[in-house]
Each structure stands twice: as C-alpha cells, then as structure tokens.
Image 1 (cartoon, one colour):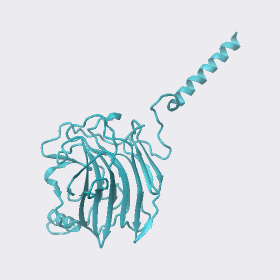
Image 2 (cartoon, rainbow, N blue to C red):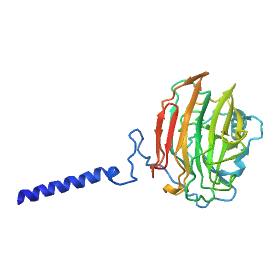
Image 3 (cartoon, helix red, strand yellow):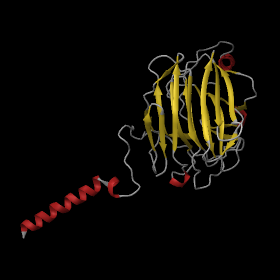
Image 4 (spheres, rainbow, N blue to C red):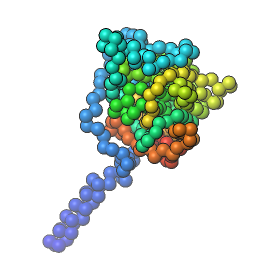
Length: 316
C-alpha cells in the first residue's frame, strides 16, 4: 500500500510538472517566443496618450504638433541645410556637429521588426513588396494608428537622427485619413530639428500590392510608396538631399501605445517579399536579425524567412 501511494505521488508530480513546463503545447493560442528573439525590455515606458491635445498628430515617431509636419511640394528637401540652420540658430551662428538622437518614439512602439546593420559601406537602395493586410476587427478611435513599413536609418536605431520610409498606415493620426482605413505615404523625419516631411497620402484597399522604395542618386533620395493594384499605380513620394550615410535597414510593424493590447486591434499578417538592398551600386545580401520592443502578445512573431523575405506575424 505504501509503495502504491509513493508511486501515485510521483506520477502526480510528473504530470503537474509537464503541464507547467508545456503550456504552449496544451493551451491553444499560447505561443513561446522564438529562440532568436531578445527577451522583452524591462525599461520600456508606456506613455499616456489618452488626452491628446488639439493640434497634435500621431506619427511613426510619436506625438508632435501639427506645425512640425510639412507636406512635400515637389522641391527637394535639403536635410543638411535644415540641420545646419537649426544649429546656427541654437548656437548663435556657430554650426555644431550633429548630435546623436535616439529613435525611441515616446508614444509608439516597434512591436516587431527585422533589422540589418551593414558591417561596412552604406546603402544606396532598399525596396520591397507587401500586400495590404486585413483591417483590425475592432474600430480605432482618434490617433490610434498602425504602421507597416521598410526604412533606412543613418546609423543604428539607438543613435540615428534621420529616418526615411515608405509607410502603410491604418487609422486616423489627427492629420490625414480620418477613418478606419489604409493609406500609403512617404515619410522623412529629422530628430535634430524635430521636423517631419511627408508626401501626399494615397488611399489603398485590403489586398492591394504595395511597392516601397528608397533610392539614392548623387545624395538625393527618393522615398516612394506605390499601389500597384490600382490603375496608374498611384504613389506617395518625396525627395530629400543629404550627405548622411544610411547603414541600417528595417522591416517593421508599429503601433501607437494607445492601441489596446488585444488581438482584435491587430491587422492581418504581412509578408514583405522581394526585399532588395544595394551598396556601392551592387546588390547585397542582408542577414536579418529580429526583435521587438515590448512583450509580444496574441500571435506576434517576426520571422526572417530568407534574405529577401520577412514575415510579420500578427494573427493565427
């Protein structure tokens, strides 16, 4: 009898241990983090955006005043002059070196992304395709926004001060869209000056094929997001001049922090394909890493399928 009791106790302990250690196997919808992801950062700060002030706009870099956003009018934006003029004003005519500014937005998170910091040299082009995913099933309210994009940074994300990106956006940011809908727009942001520049937004439909591209000719970058499923391939674009070197490429899904961490607020999965990077006029093969800035929830999981494909997983 004593042996039977001991055996029963051991068996019960083993079963309970198996349940605790194997929750991802027996509880539907629970997924372990992939092995190549870093653990969630413990020092992330969630900013309260529930009381957005009139005249503020949600951007891919957080809240800003509408006066800081400038619509592209066809004239090449001279980033170098913008920064020089900024430092001349701040330092009474003495132009100072560009100071590093961390691209860590105060009211948005890069929920999941793939990245590649080029070991040597600089990028000349970056392009790729993705389809407009299904919309979130829950309605977004004012300034709740989701973003999907490719981008280039002039340095690692922790110290870059210029980002250029063709963006697919869902929701109303307080500046354009004004609906629960998808739009594409070209963005450029200079953290040194706090100024944002955008192309003309273009409405797109679920299932449309988006072509995003960043290309440099003699230090003039063209940023473009094009809908290849509509007649005439409408696009949002802008041109910027800068002698800065772009050395990090990213593929990103981002949410404003006022979007509830609930599956129904996430758009569908997004597959970025035919990703192409060049340096010195020749195509280069990226070695993508994957990461996330907050705890993954629902089915979020960034996967570098290959050097030319990144899959941002948000739904089952």
